Length: 125
Ligand SMILES: [Zn+2]
Ligand SMILES: [Zn+2]
Image 1 (tube, helix red, strand yellow):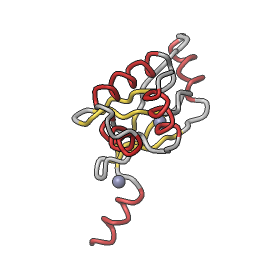
Image 2 (cartoon, protein in one colour):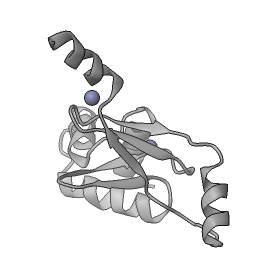
Image 3 (spheres, protein in one colour):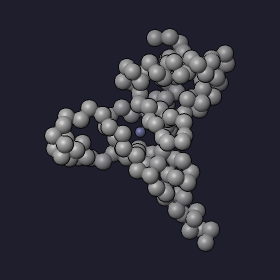
Image 4 (cartoon, helix red, strand yellow):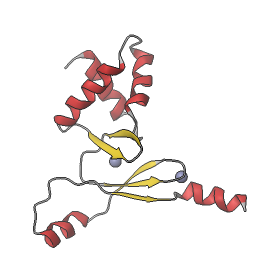
C-alpha cells in the first residue's frame, strides 16, 4: 500500500461523515502538503473497486465516500445537505424475498428535512 493510500484510508476510517473527495483532499493536505487531488480521486477509485469504501452518488452534488460497506441506508437532508447512516434491520431480507433475487448491492437514500433543520424552521416562525 502506498503512503498516499494509507493516509486516505486513515482519513476515511477516522470520520463518521460521508466526505467528498474535496474534503478528503483538504484533510490529506494537512499531513501531506504536496498531495494532488488527482491522487485522491485515483486512490478513491481503487478503494471503491476493492470494496473498502462505498461511493454514494447524489443528484446535483459531488459524490460522497462512505467507510461503511455493510448494507445500510442513508438519510439526506434537502436543507443542509447532511448525509447520515441509517440501519434498517430486516430490509435486505424483505427485498430479497420480494424480488426473489439475491441482492448484492443497492443504494437507498431517503430525502427529507433533518431534525436540526426542522427545529430551526420552527424557531424562525
Ligand atoms: Zn438539515
Ligand atoms: Zn453510509
